[in-house]
Length: 427
Ligand code: UDX
Image 1 (cartoon, rainbow, N blue to C red):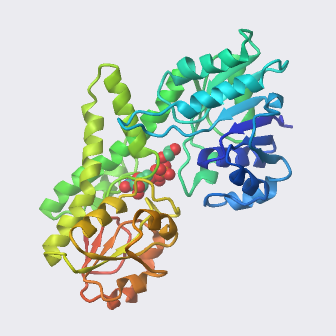
Image 2 (tube, rainbow, N blue to C red):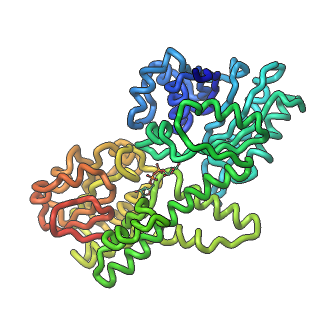
Image 3 (cartoon, rainbow, N blue to C red):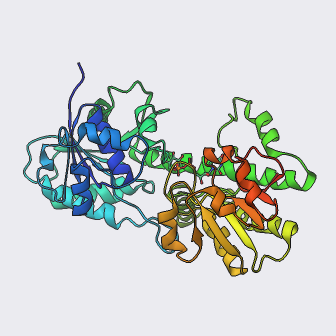
């Protein structure tokens, strides 16, 4: 018999919605506070405002039953746990903007005023170490106008991969809970009771640092693989063969060693930059982390270089681009490595025809003037060269489509194709 908790989730964006739906799926009673009324309405109708595998299913099972969304804070005083899942966008200098965190904390404090119940306010957003203690707690306490111990605080980072977020939530490698007290931690732990998962309890600050460190380490694995790949390319070695041999060492492990265009998405670039800024503010010069970013920034330019060595000047040439999303199984193009590549193709006067299984609509907002196709074959029609920019598994099934190109120049920014005559960006 497991405990059913009342849970409120502030923010119905990517993390908030996945978190809320999954807690409802586990049987808890969940309320989402989402300022955007349109989003809240969609959620209440069981329609996910974003694409995420399995989310629609889970939302259909829970919405209108034990999951609801609203655009105000009323009623959150019935919650055992209030998760803060608002955005922490980068500021101009790369450090994290905590405006939404502060605002949410103040609103929570006001909404909990006079409540008799014990509440645990839990930060899930990725925030710089120290934020829960120095921003969230003071903001909540100020508007709560209370110094009693009717509230506890936790920091419980998410490690969800887009496209696989539901599975990651339900089958985590570990759950990290930093807390202001044992009591606060034990409540949050109860929310996850049904999952058979390793729980690591820490201080608030350490939990915050664990999230940044995980992302920075994963990003480092990718940039490391890319640097080795760039060396390999000079010598004519396949870096994938090398990393396979390296990855079987259990101290290293075989994941996140795929060389290519580098990392994009809403987390890695932003979080590594925020960690660099945090280090600098505290008197450190994090040279390794800066190099991780530098290598990543270089990779898109390298695919253009390879293109030049194959077909020379690209002015007026037709370049087919396969893949726009920052990775497979998502329609998200945030910080996608395809953006700097297409930018450079256009700057140099190429004619770009693109195909992506899901991300076309998102990319039209960034590049309204390139030609988008609804299948790979049409994008390849008459092309002088093809660049593969996203690791969509379905690209591996392409064969005859490449016969529609004017010349068979295929350059891979990801290792995904299985046809012949391919050159890789760094292998
Ligand atoms: C990541 C983290 O994995 C997740 O734990 C965290 O909570 C949020 O950030 P996500 O951004 O969804 O998740 O994508 P992920 O699958 O990690 O890939 C990130 C980027 O790295 C993609 O652009 C991908 O193409 C690239 N990548 C990944 C590589 O270039 N090589 C690899 O070996 C793995």
